[in-house]
Image (cartoon, rainbow, N blue to C red; front, side, top):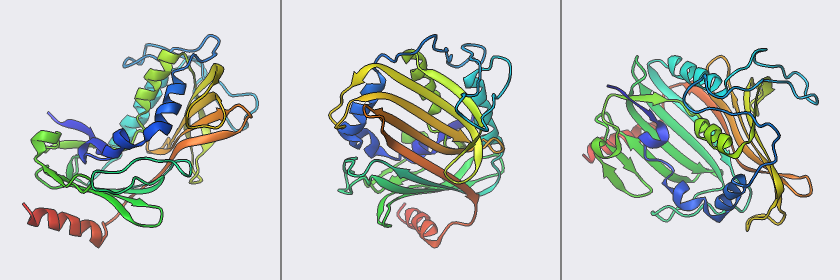
Length: 301
């Protein structure tokens, strides 16, 4: 049986996220656990599309925003359809996922075990060599700071062995669940988890089409909105928080995630994004740098 893996798991990536998004993220995440003030908040459901429906609507203040359907529609069903489409569009070749990820300036994301500081402004490139069925042949991930410094590299070879520069560890596939065949899944922004958490909080969820992403493309937006009963103070903001919105935009043609961001509203009405990730995708030959990491990994076996 094939295993469906997210690349972050496949390559043992972002180990510093657990260690290192630090107090800023924990404080803001805790704010999302506050009691949101939502009247008749829709239920999202979990794994079954039939559970938890909502009536898609067009906000009065918006333009070019139309309901996805006129009848009640499951958010999970929409998300599942997009993710299924993203997997089905995969084909043989080198699949390049480029991500620009930004935290607020000055954010302390922590330090990797190798002493490299996790940047607040990251450029993340995933190069995944796929076969005709969408299984991973080999892969390389490179995290850079915005000024181009290599911060972390992770490599998976053809036999599933992985290496991570942040720890220096080489792991056999049995230890990290990367033994072939391992099915690749394009980035999803962990939105399924976000929707489940939204249900527990009673947050409002809506779906809109023809929304512009930062790369100029229009897409399908899934929006989770929290309004807090009372302002929430955190150690990481000078002002209390009054609300938050999690926003993800997907390409309706390919199912690929284009943008994911969390926006906090402060007491004075201003907003703070924490964080924002913008994605682009291409099938193209990897750079010599990527191939060199693979050759080095094979030579060291």
